[in-house]
Length: 241
Image (cartoon, rainbow, N blue to C red):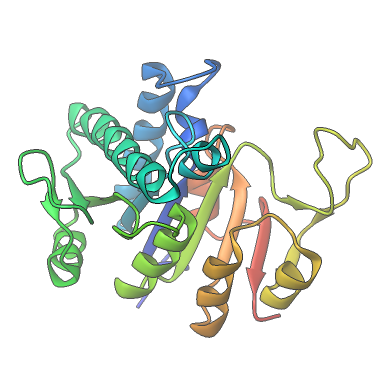
């Protein structure tokens, strides 16, 4: 049951690794991470349970490494480890703000993160802790988008919030094409048939099969996470139609 004033009880926030770079070309920007942590803290104080999945594009992309000649499996595992670095960075920023946080990894590394156990993750959420899911699904060939969809369904999240650097889904790249058209709403089939870059096809198919909606919005605009939680139309909503 949702909170009395908000449409969502439990959400999964998917952050791109690139978002953590701020204005840098690589790595982590501490001011940007703290800003995200402050927003997440403010939303948590509303009573919403929040789980997070972070990409690794600011550090390492397994697919890009494979295209450059590296073994795909090795590259994907390196990408998973990069997501752990990002997760620990966000955890540190949240805990400096007094927010109880747990990092749960799909790859065993007991010294830095808890192993991912679904029931334990749900219990953390019920206790008001932010849960950050690291290391993707723990398997090569699956993206963090797919990990986000899978974890969202496992914890019975009400929606996936995909926070990006653009304010929704467009028919073309709005950076390269100023006349690109933004969609306010899409169905899962629209995304698949039009080849729109919302999430990869595996992730979209998982959401479609399990009727899990997705909201794509601009993370860099302060206050947007709170607006998304409140159900405001600030991006592109993907659902059954």
